[in-house]
Image (tube, rainbow, N blue to C red; front, side, top):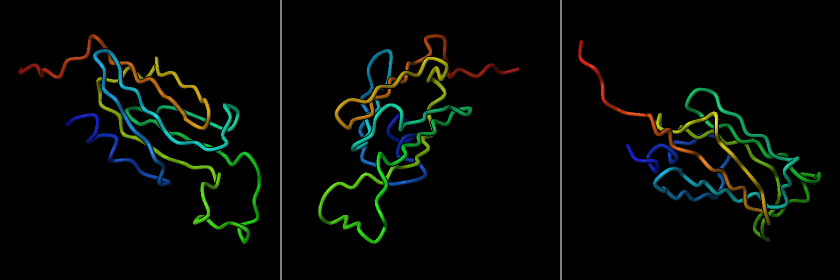
Length: 116
């Protein structure tokens, strides 16, 4: 499976994102309109990356018209990660409404299975 197969198997809120695979890491970028670093929570559980963004302000649900543009409603999304990702070294930052996540590859990872 490729990184694209793993990340396309996400669950949760529909969020626009892209991913770039580099030699030593994957770069995952998500649209997070209006979010600050205080609004976003990331955590890993096994080979899953859980991302939560709370709305940066409260909007009465009756006043929302999504067809008029981007509305900051927050989101919850879970990505399944390849086993080659070193989850203890994941880093993230948010700038201008883009959440950037660096998923470093484990240099010692191998998919070779020993036969007993």
